[in-house]
Length: 135
Image (cartoon, rainbow, N blue to C red):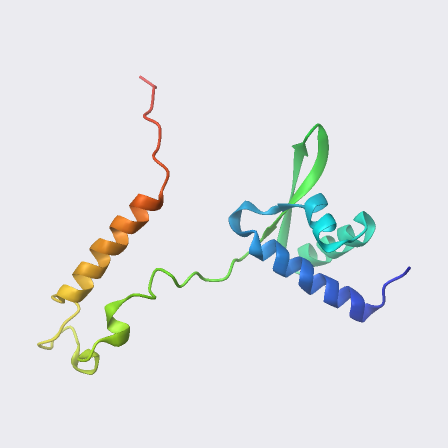
């Protein structure tokens, strides 16, 4: 069955959203085709179309003894979780805050506490690195 242009655009959007949802790890094109129930021919055409639009990059890799492509989004959506809890968003004196004012981001205890907590949380979420054995 040959797909019409509207169907191709619909599939292209689904493919792109799926690639983005896999984040920095990307997705093997064979997994993507299975997930979206596409033939390898249609899937490859869509991937090439997205690559030509500079929305994804295809990286040739050896997987289970076979050459395939891993698909990555060129740009991922911005993650706002790092600033969602920023005290400035709900600060009652934000309208009076300035570098030269009596309320200043350079001397704000709320910002300082938020930064320390954010830093501590980001470090606790990272996997511990193995010590280097190089001499």
